[in-house]
Amino acid sequence: MNSFSFHNPTAILFGEGTLSKLGEQVGKFGKNVLLVYGGGSIKKSGLYDRVLEQLSSIGANVVELSGIEPNPRLTSVNKGIELCRNHQVDFILAVGGGSVIDASKAIAAGAKYDGDVWDFLDRKAAVQDALPIGTVLTLSATGSEMNGSSVITNWETNQKRGFGSPLVYPKFSILDPTLTYTVPRDQTVNGIVDIMSHVFEQYFSLTQDTPLQERLCESILQTMIENAEAVLENPENYAARANMMWCGTLALNGGLISVGMANDWASHGIEHEISAIYDIPHGAGLSIVFPSWMKYVYDARPDRFAQFAVRVWGIDPTGKSDEELALAGIEATRAFFTRIGAPATLSHYNIGRDQFDRMAEEAVRFGPIGSFKRLNKDDVKAIYELSL
Ligand code: NZQ
Ligand code: ZN
Image (cartoon, helix red, strand yellow):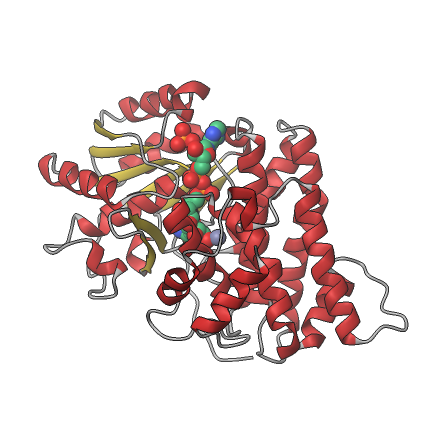
C-alpha cells in the first residue's frame, strides 16, 4: 500500500425528509444565493417549489441559473459567473445531477478568478479561491456531491475536460433517495454503469497489499449488482434507491475506497472524447468503452481480473486459469450491462471510426493515460476499434 493523506470536508445529510434542513444549511453561508438547476425536471417533480420555500424561510435573495445541459457547457458556466458578480452572490446551491453540480463548481471557482475559467480545465491555472457551494442531489451517478471534481465541455472546440480542487468540495449535500424516484429508466441505467465504472477505475490497480480497499470496491460492486434490477423494476423502491445513492457517493468521493492505490481513469478519458463530439450520456459511453478497455489491458495483471470474476461475479474458479477467469469476468460485466439495457457498441449511436484519430489524440494530449497499462494514442485508437 502506498502512503496517503485523505480529507473530505463535505457534510452529508442522508435520507427521506432531509430537504427540511436545507434552509438551515444555506443560512450558514450568506443570504445572496445563486440557485443552479437543469432543464426542468425539478419543476416537474415539485422539488423547485420545496427548495424555494426553504430559501425563503431564511430570507435569502435568490438569483436563478436554469437550463444547465447534461454534459454542461462552458457558455452556461460563464453565464453563472456573470450572475455571481452582478448580484454579489455569496453561496451557490446546485439542485440536480452531476451536470448541475459540476457547472456550479466551475462557476464557484470562476467567480473568484480574474482570468478565463477555461484556464482551470486547460491546466493553465489552479483554483486559488472559490465561492462555497451546496447540493441537493437528484440523480445517483457521478459522486460530484462529495468530491472536488468538475467536468465541463467547450462546445466550440469539442473539448470535454475536468478540473479538481479541494476548494470546490460542496460544504454540504442533501441526499434524499426519494428525490431520485423520477429519474427516467435510461438515466438510472447510465447512473448504474457510471457508479460501477468509478469503482473499476480504482480497483484495477497494480498496487499490491491493499486487501481492505479491494474489498471496499468489491462490496460496492456487489451492492450495485444486487440493487440494480430492483431499482429498474420499481423506481420508487426506497431501499434500492437509497443503496444506489450511497454506493454512488462512496464510489467517487475523493478516493476513500482506494486510498494508497494507484488509480487508472483511462476509460473515463477515452469516454469523455466520445461525449465531447457526439454529446452522448457519460454512463452510456462508459458501458461501451469499459469492457473494451478490460479486454485490452487485463494481461497486465490477470490475477486482479480473476479475483474480480470470482468475488464480484461469483464465477467458479475450479480448474480455470487466471486468464480464463479474467475473460469470464469481462464477459459477465458486458452481459450485466446489456441485461440492464445499457448500450454495447458505438454503432448504437451510429458512431463510426471517422473521428477516432482526433479523439485518441485529444485523450493523450497531456501524455499517456492510465496506470494499469499506460496507453498512448495507438492504444486508445485500438480500444475505440474494439468498441465499434
Ligand atoms: O436537466 P434536468 O431537467 O434536471 O434533467 C436531467 C438530465 O436530463 C435528468 N434528471 C436529473 N435528476 C432527475 C432527472 N430527471 C428526472 N428526475 C430527476 N430526479 O437526468 C439527465 C442527466 O442529468 P446529468 O446531471 O447530466 O447526469 P449525471 O449525474 O450522470 O451527470 C453527468 C455529467 O457528470 C460528469 C459527466 O461527464 C457528465 O458531464 N461527470 C462528473 C464527475 C464528477 N464531477 O466527479 C465524474 C463522472 O465520471 C463524470 O465524468
Ligand atoms: Zn464517471
